Length: 210
Image (tube, rainbow, N blue to C red; front, side):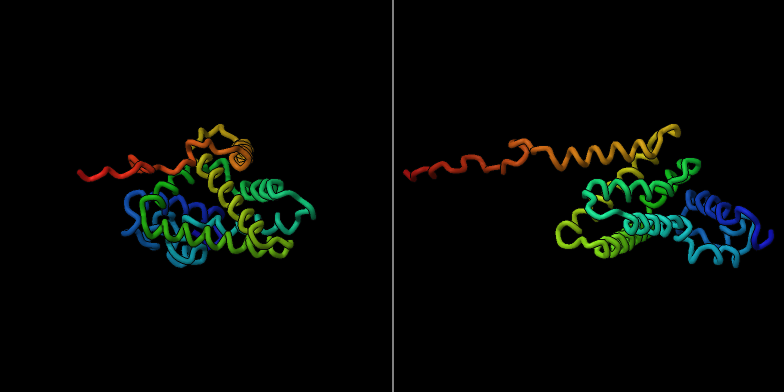
């Protein structure tokens, strides 16, 4: 197949996923390329290593989040900011590949190396988002809170989306997640849930020795 054959990247991703489901550790870039009907050199023109096949969309997510932050108007509330960034991020979630993402996540969850790469990718995204927010004037606890909310909202939306039926709209899931976060941050915690457990007989006088 020619170097610029349309769909090469997608074929490599599909081939890698199929092979990883039979065993990630023993799968090589050459095997992925062969299954996709292309060459090993073509594989490395698209991906730095076999791990990157499963994380190819993370760069676009970061770019969209940073661009959304750069375009925010002054005086926006924290939750409106999170909403704008989340709406930009979910544009990356392709409904046609929802099942693919679900299979991908199962592979990541069962492989320590891939879980570590996943965490590093998320950390890199958070750092880029933090830098973009600082450039908009956020700092201190406000900055930390907004970064945390963006991370929680995007991760929860993604997780619910890959577990949902094919007909489930990701935008509706994002709306539900944001509503839940709003409720959680403004609802009083029941007293029973915050009471510290005490040891039996706490506060009572010790028995007097005979």
